[in-house]
Image (tube, rainbow, N blue to C red; front, side):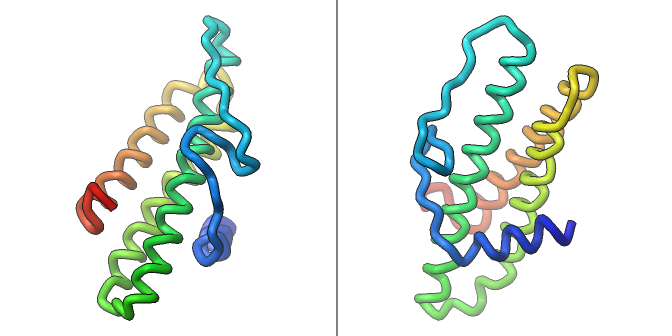
Length: 129
């Protein structure tokens, strides 16, 4: 857990430029259109990583904006969002490491954590930000 918190806090204060549908290097993420279960799992794991990179940038931008606006009352919202991101990141790592036998449950857990992150964002920040 400490590894995830340390990683997030370090990344929270730096801007990571990633476009939707690209990985950290800006390379477009290719989604597999195959009936190969291994390729499908890798495709889903790649998308999860790209989505989390986009969320990381979004949270970093929000943190920078609240800091620049002097919004000290947003600390609780930032903590709540950070907690949801750390949970989604943890589940994404499990998704990436899951074998065939554990894949379905790992995907459900990641989808739930990612949904919770999105729900918290919409509740605390709003859908259009």
